[in-house]
Image 1 (tube, rainbow, N blue to C red):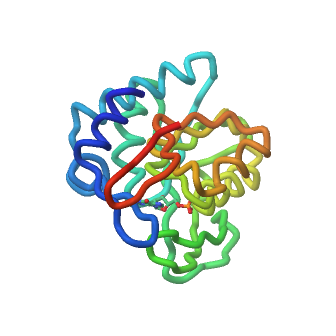
Image 2: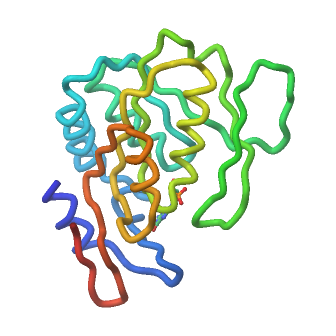
Amino acid sequence: MEALKERILKDGTVKPGGVLKVDSFLNHQMDISFINEIGKEFKRRFADNHITKILTIEASGIGIACIAAQYFGVDVVFAKKAKSINLDGEMYCTKIESFTHKKVYDVILAKRFLSPEDHVLIIDDFLANGCALLGLIDIVQKSGATIEGAGIVIEKGFQDGGQKVRDLGIHLESLAIVDSMSDDSLTFR
Ligand code: 5GP
């Protein structure tokens, strides 16, 4: 998505540790008309898929997923980072290591919000090592629902998350794939 690449070049900043900050338009302050175009683009790329639910993870994925969901006409459900796990059988649970916070979270989703009849599109802001996305895939697989695909706003192509997910045979669409980045240059695939 050319407009996204231009926006990253204009407003993105590279932080130590391979972190790209896009918090002026995507995941802190949110440029809603721009994210609306992102939502439309996800719909265009998954136009042939029958999708009944969008799944994301708190916090940054939620706003993006909600805007995209309006183009699919479906509900959004988001996985929550749990402080304590209540193993009462009502929740799907998985573990996710946060790339930005270097912490392992237990992540939960109430079973009643995902069923074997669902066809799920997973949406998130970034794909780096793939922990977040693989955790969400694990939850969908536990539910017996069908994974229609995953839509990512920014994939960091120099980390191996994208490869891992494509190797699973999952239809992955990343709207911008960053191939390399340093303080003064950023290239796209
Ligand atoms: P992964 O689990 O694929 O390693 O990382 C994905 C998650 O980490 C995303 O949900 C996103 O919140 C966060 N993340 C990973 N890399 C970056 C980055 O370069 N910039 C920002 N802002 N978030 C990132």
